[in-house]
Image (tube, rainbow, N blue to C red):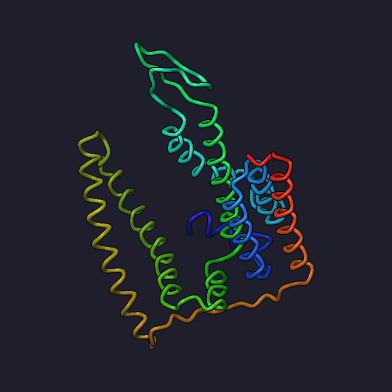
Amino acid sequence: MIIIDKLCYTSKLRYTNASIKTALAIITLLVCVIDRSIALSVCILFAMGYLTIHLGGISPSHYFRLMRIPLIFLFLSTIAIIINFSKTPLSAFAVPIGNIYITSSRTSLLFAAQLILTALASVSCLYFLSLSTPITDILTVFRKIHCPEIMIELMLLIYRFIFVLLDIADSLTCAQRSRLGNVNLKTSCKSMGNLISALFIRAFKKSSFLFDAMESRCYDGTIHVLEENYPAKKNHIIYLIVFELTLIILSVILRICGLHI
């Protein structure tokens, strides 16, 4: 199992009602994306981190390691927003190179910070859900809200094949390294091509075997999984309502006070 799947099964919130956790993550995510305030994004980021680490019992090192992945991507993707090449210096900074400047405006820096924090806060909402709720429980919630059955089955099969492909890729990579398949750039490129082609062929065979196994077990077009029911507690529902109302009120206050950035 990959680390996210392993952590969600060991979370202290594992046996909390899945509908409550899904509603908390999705509503908070929508509030964050719609508002796009730096202050509110920071509050959501810390709140979701607290829920995941303190209440969920997830190791801070694991959590920050997972958050580092989107953070690196966001920094690289926002460079194009921050950096400008212009003949006139802008308000934030300007580094002269010949007749042009590598420069940026304060508006661009503010927009980049807003984009990064909003994205990180949104990711923290999804991490809260994925690090506390197994995929089968999430799909049960989708089934309760009458999500199309074909979408649920596709999500389950895709999720299953993530592990299959990772396992195959890991074994192939180990075999290549043991045969010095990455000793230099030329052999690394050749090994990568062989890895991709072998992975495609084996994944195709695995999917065929999986379908044969499903049909031998009377597959009728619907994948049935064991569903565990954890009743929602009243105090959890109250906490959910209070938390979301607090975020909405905070957003309104920030707009009224002119602090919505």
